[in-house]
Image (tube, rainbow, N blue to C red; front, side, top):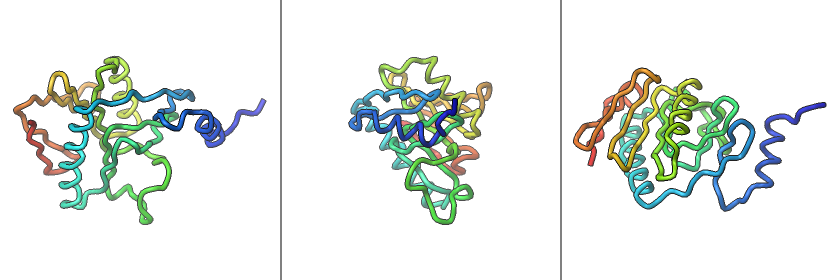
Length: 176
């Protein structure tokens, strides 16, 4: 029996999903994204704003918000924030649809109903797909954990300065 192509399967799934909700496609199945709270949105916008100012000033690439889909291996993911370096953006610019590549930086802001093991699984998936850095933001603990790999991890607390490292060179974000 013939299996439908990935594009056809995605179209079938998208036509049957509630358009009022956001979904990621994980292992071929739609997974509804949890609704984020106000603090989640505030912190996300603050990070996007600061990252975007730096990226524009240094002409490093583009920053994307939580509605941007990236194809990560066989899955479609919507990181809360993503960065793609200028060297990887085609001359015609960002695609109108999904990015067919993994971003250079993916940021996941932990929601109250996120399960830790699932967050770490997403981190591993991003890193295996070639993402250079994954930032995991914990609103509850007021920390940002930066993953360069599953063994090269650095934590930043409330009073630390987050350094963008090789992904966003010379970016320093004071924590609030």
